[in-house]
Image (cartoon, rainbow, N blue to C red; front, side):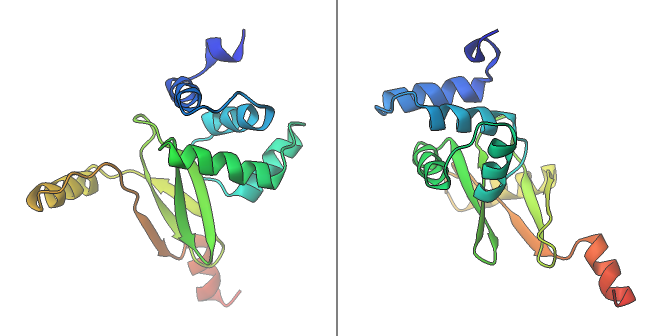
Length: 154
């Protein structure tokens, strides 16, 4: 089965937008689209680079940044600032919307969804006469393991 036969709607939309924007299919771009299509939560460039190297699909870090920048400009990927100068990237897809809890001690990232939060965002934007075209909420704090370690002095 070819990649096109088993690709997601996000992948097909990404390929179409890249083509419409004049980007040719290329090795790094194709490999990164594969990786992003498989991931379910935001990843750092270093994590992506490690995943690709482990699967024998190594792509240089500069190429990863370049492709992510292209995808971000085309509104296919969002960059999420998680603090301490660290950014994570994830695909933007209607069936893939969530927010993030970020532990400021160990760096753990936990995705979450909350219908009440989504409704509050829509109420706020409607009340302000503002059309929200996208959003991401990042909550910073300490995960349970780090809180426990701090409490026990570990």
